[in-house]
Image (cartoon, rainbow, N blue to C red):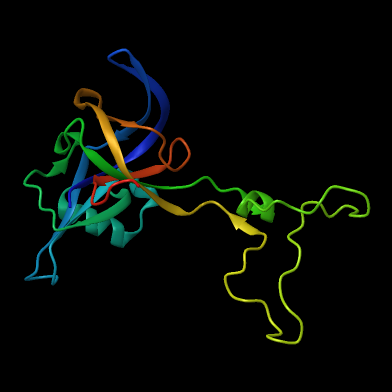
Length: 206
């Protein structure tokens, strides 16, 4: 499955005929090939791509040795793509075609400790007489003697966001190879400046 690493730049809009279409701009590649894995040596076929070179001063010895073996600088991000074997020493946005469908993976914005109304879209308690200051609480969380515990997976307040999320079946509207930019229709997960993985779509958005 071919894919590429990149960084989310932000959102803008482009004209498509007489329609103004919202797009997300992704700065993707060129990503150096850091390692090639084969069934003979590793038991499976894959290629490891890097993204964003970092200074040698902040890289440890294993990272430096791994990168020097491939003839590249130490990479801030490394990711494998199974059953993909590019012939070139780096992968650029040219592996995609305008108009095709892609799956985009990113890390959503972290929202910290969050209550049930924001995290799970609970309605909250009535805001009428006698409720006191408990309008945003979650209410009851269990039963009485049986089962005498809170079920696993109960929707409660807690950490919200900062999760790895994949949005499937997005249209790759435009490729600007001279600027290493991908213009993807609609929104993708993550904040501006976050790591983004773009792959050939294996599914279709429902």
